[in-house]
Length: 77
Image (cartoon, rainbow, N blue to C red; front, side):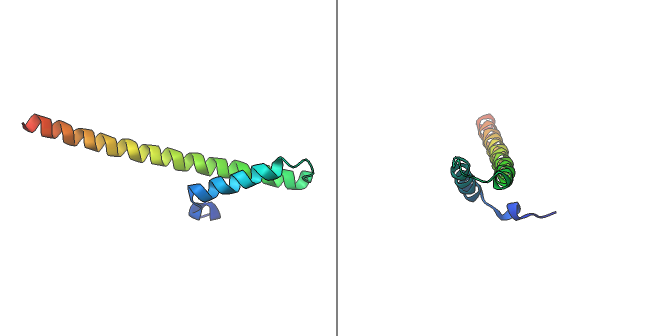
């Protein structure tokens, strides 16, 4: 199942989240709008955390592969 969030990059999600936070700081925000903004902010936070988690796993895999290459090179000498 594809959503609009699938195409949203980390930087864009973070920018939208910052915009929402600025809006939430406005004391004059309507309660109905507040609820929708908080819900959207939660979606963006989940998206950003997921992107960070995916990047972390990717980096860990790359480092592990590099470690294996170094160990293989060391044992070959």
